[in-house]
Image (cartoon, rainbow, N blue to C red):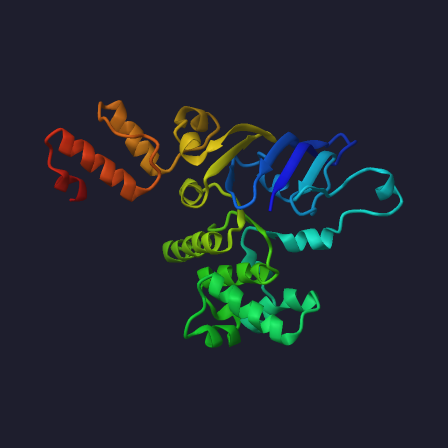
Length: 304
């Protein structure tokens, strides 16, 4: 599923003395099956931008297209009352806000995940299948799936609650998943479990994945391409490795790269002949070992 914006602008309180341009003439395209990160300083327009992707916000000007369909086309047919089916669009593009577990409300995990499919008018048999499938997708299936589905969502760990909330969106079977700060507030174990579930989910379902995050390591793990926003505009764009290698540009914006990038660039600055575009710690360790062997050093010191 593709998402495209053309000269998208969003102004809060337009026409008033307090008008604020949150998104400023942004044109971008996210292709079917891509994994794209969106990063930028606080207040750069990231959350405002992604809320246009399924029609939660209407542009002040510009266009938003999902699979080629203009969500807010201003032509004669629309003025006569015909417009994009936003309910259908929101089933295709699942938007998961920061701390989605705050939106859990049913007495059991099963009922919470089943809420969306039932609102689609699905029968109980298909609803049951979708609930089981969604739990499996977020890594909460297996022998304990029945036990988890019958428990109160509020009795689960923070990481499990987050995955149940995501499962509720997945039960609608979207083609695109948009996540705003998906690991915020999770402990290391919960964060690791969620990242593994998202990586597996994209691989198995060919989802288009769009991730907004201040956590550079999350973006390094989940995305292939990154957009950097500042003051509502896209100021950097490219493959994740390439964008994170531009430490000077990121630091000017008050951002940083994952620690692995800083480490490799620091080694290179001291004369080490190592790659500086690596994002994974295991890759970096192998690269340092290769360099040390080439210099006749002891690679075991790398692992000490």
